[in-house]
Image (cartoon, rainbow, N blue to C red; front, side, top):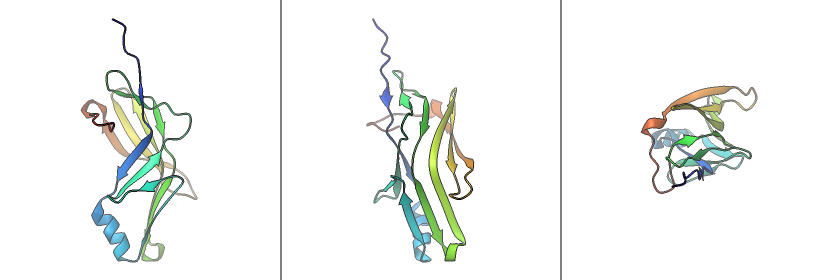
Length: 130
């Protein structure tokens, strides 16, 4: 039997932000702004589109592989600028059985910050979502 080498391409990164934080930002007269192709959902998730030229995919065994860079930003501001959270251009960096999610955290002085370590062994894929 031939080995199945077909890959299921990943197209977007959906990132949920805690409702209590979103409510707090809005309660102090703050603003939640998206740009660069990011779409905000009614459930408080932000959908980042895949950057061109990436190869992030699920392989035939259902394992994530490749490199995933995503486009766009979400900015939370409030208290006259004293509260400022900027999440931009997430990148999923895979190394063996682990992965990390990094972001660009500042629009004027870009620098990458690791914000999450992902356990690829615990990952599941259901209904087209990982």
